[in-house]
Image 1 (tube, rainbow, N blue to C red):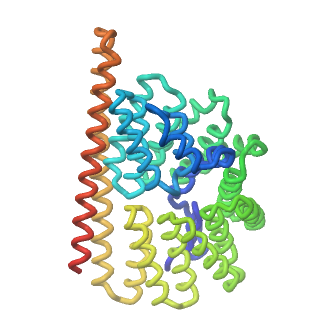
Image 2: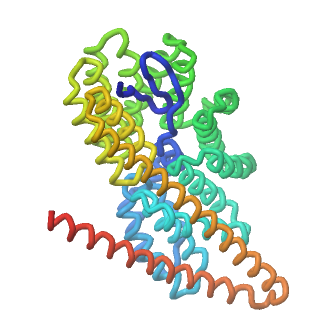
Image 3: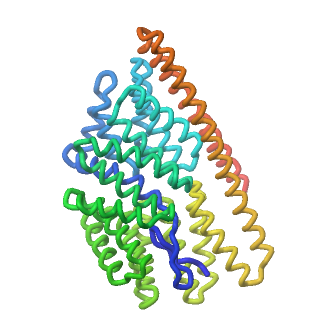
Length: 436
């Protein structure tokens, strides 16, 4: 039977088990603080200021970065390309690596994880080398997010722990809120609910200092843990609180999550109300434009149709869910959909389709293994590179700046090569579609 899923949990025949962490949490937390900053200074004026500034204006670029991330990554790339060109011409290594962050996040959003890893890991190591805590905490955060999407939760915990360590030393509390919530989510998916709750309880003492978006996510997490413990009344309180805060902050993705969880809660007691909640969740997910969110909304809607004996509509929604998940290589979402489709076809005694789906699942598992193995090799190579750089700089300190600039220019070339490869892949894909 298809599952009705919340952000963190899955229902199967009234049993509860943990689900993957959605990328939503990891992506939006650093954006929260910047949205407030952007209100104080219009985005258009920021873009004009950056356009007409001389040289490498990282201060304005960083404000633009947070104002448009993650909803408008395509627009961010346009600005990042400008930053990259200026940085290369000026020999500004900080600017080159900051542009690389934007390219890495863009590749990650499209599901090209190995390309994203090379850029983000290299930038992180550069920030460590140059002792830049402001950018380093972002570097750790981006890598934690990447491992989230890979479904490698122990690795995600490692990077978010490093993020938390730096955040505790930062005067800006929103960074600590981000790290604590991400760690709580990571431990839930890792299967350690006690540790997840411990981080949530620490966050609770910071609740008064959180902005609306972070408060909504906090209440969602608490509600999920209550649901996992079958504390239905408490879960309903936290979900409704999350919805109230989300509506006030007008964050489409947060609103979608709140309606989704309320739909799960209502499914056992009021099927019609549950459908209203799920339809609302899909509406706001579509408005958010976040593929994983839309995929999960269709997934839950398929569960509702299956539970009301509309099997063909359930299959249709599962296919839509898979389509959106595949568009961004969201492996965990793709696998969840395929498992449910395989189960339905088994119940229909259509073993040929079920077996075909199982082969696709094995193929996805193989892709994840190969990508993760490749990332481990890339990590070792990059670590060796930076160790060698450090040794050379210790012997030839007067050449440090020149050396960093050379490495930064190599990074710029790497970004441009990856971009060319991506354009070729896109053109090839469009050509194949036109032939279909």
